Image (cartoon, rainbow, N blue to C red; front, side, top):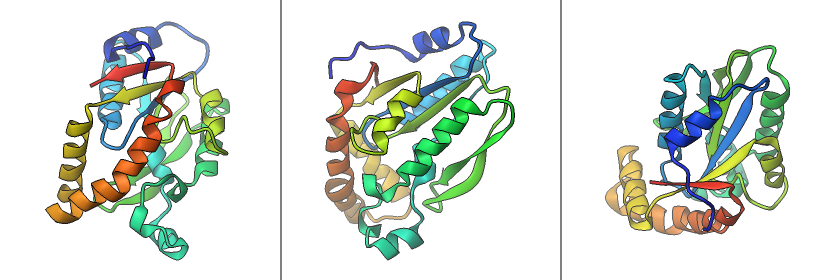
Length: 209
């Protein structure tokens, strides 16, 4: 991971510079790296400079459990083939091209562990869209279309031990036993993390937590 480092404050200052078009910024990183937290910090930093921003997470394109069960993939939810990649790419194209009216994007409810259609309104006045997820730099169709639709993709890195600890705590918070949480991190999250980490070299810059 040799990409130059940038801070949230530096990035916000850059994004606050005048422009005649909406900016789309991608935050990519392994599960539990803190992408959502960074996105929230960036939105706050932009708001302090008078810039309207919103987060559109890749997690909104999780396949619902009913579909994962039908496909036999529920036991590895979070893997790349448990997302609607084509739907995600289509939304990014809309967010780039359709800035004269509100575009509604799906969100993800962690209590339900399900996507929520139309949960996020990207209004015409939104100047910066932040999209965060695991697979923004994967070199396979349709994910390889993502970087060209974004102004920049920034890799969020967190120490592996801390990241795994956070993941176990998250899984326990949302209903798994400690043993189930540890097993999920080892058998599902960690293979996904290794796949994501292999794409870090393609990131423009890096935020280290």
